[in-house]
Image 1 (cartoon, one colour):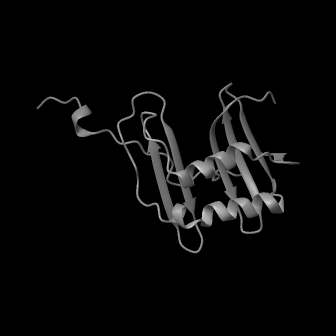
Image 2: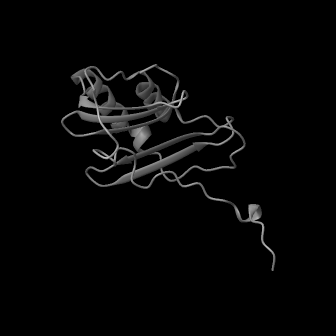
Amino acid sequence: MQRGTVRHVCVAVSRDGEYRIVRSLDNGQTERLYGKMPKEDFRQLTKLLGAADFRNLSGDESGVIRQEAEIFVTEILEPETWHLQWLNADGENPFPDSISKLINWLQRFQPKDGKSFEYAEYPDVCPAGGLRLLQPPVAENSHH
């Protein structure tokens, strides 16, 4: 597959380091790979996800989307479900450092010996809630 810039990434990782990754590239290609994460990569990811400054983030950060937005969504299922969605809507409100570190790790992660899979085999790689963008009431066009 011809490599392009990653535009969208979803990663599902089990407790034993097995991963499934879906990457949408700016050239229109979608890369779907699964395999076993090297121990050092798994250790780094676990450390980033368990960091206190990351775990202390809460809620949904939102804003008015002006042009290209950066969106970060995570869903951690153990020991209890924890969901975080953060939005840099206008390019002027960068992600907190703990999210930026995780994004940088995801961008650098190169699955070695990953095997391709079809969407139907693992349709649940991306967070179950998906991306939910809300329209503010002032944007509504209605007549009474």
